Image (cartoon, one colour):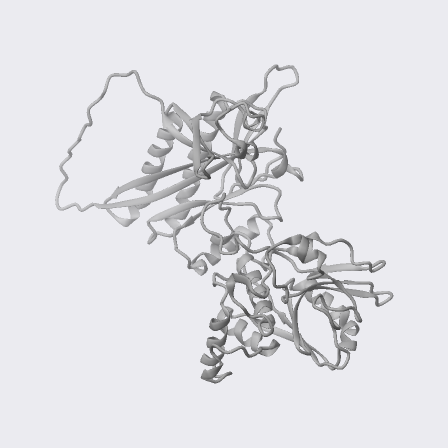
Length: 505
């Protein structure tokens, strides 16, 4: 059930079966390295079921000198791994369910069946939410419980050995958070072999953690994070020291891992902020729609090639967050959409600024007078470039047009931006601002259509209203904007602000 493995290191729960054998057996395939990698067929993530088991440990190190720290770490890791693999564990699941009063309760029990039991409703108390369990984004969470022992209790033993001279010892405690994701066929029963495989995976992660503890001797806490980048067809677990939000401390490690995992070296894919959250933590964009253009049909350009925004963005528009900016805030909303792209694609950790924050920033850099703060004055492409540079350290290029009629003449340049940068473009000109998400362009005929996201929408987050009203849609020269009037005024001057994606990991 498991395909060929890459030599970097492996963490897969699989089953294998000889041609003349009966019931297939569980097996854990473990390899070396600090990143767990599995080469698997396309669609593997969607077709298999996923189980997750986390474990917090403390490694107590005692050594006489810094040179002996590595040996002390080896002893502590070996003892902890032996405890994990040598203990008779049971695995407790906890599944959320919604009560009649809207409160969330949990159904729990020891897992001894298959993921299909949840999907088929065989566990009557699990609730409807359980049917979605076992995906990459929502694995079945399991907790370790040691089985009770029938052996006679043993009192703790303290061993004392005097030392010669004035020998000194150092004591150090390192906190470790293990997080194992294992894959299984949904109909496979979670039996003793499967339990042993999960325990072996946790022990393997602990062994892989040693290299990071030695590489970052000043750090006292380490954690395994899980990643599922679109560029890979598998889930990868990576150990990082706990450095808070300072992603740059891990730059060299990320760079090495990108090379090891054959990931591109020009975009962040395995930062701390890229890690899977499994529904935990807050989402600052939870009440807003993302990637609304994905609900659209074709543009109508015959023989064209689509060049689109790459990654996730959030649709910001008039009247959101109970803030009335109708008639003056369209460029502010376009800026917020652009910043959301950089946040959601993990280039920056900033919060999306509000209108007053944007105005105050322009005052702080000397672009606007103090009276600008709290006003309803418009901003344009140049002001937005100042904001991106000041708050995000993002540079921009500007494509200028003397009239709206000229815009199709630079279709190739616009297509090149989306092909190489993939960031949303802010359109400033005339009296209205828009966000450009892509272009469909036939290089042979010159025919093109522009994918416009219109910030002038004033209603709720309803994708049918947004697409039905053409607040996001394919537009051509001469078409009307969603709010009426020409989209591109032939006599107006235009700036297309093209933010440049940082080349980093």
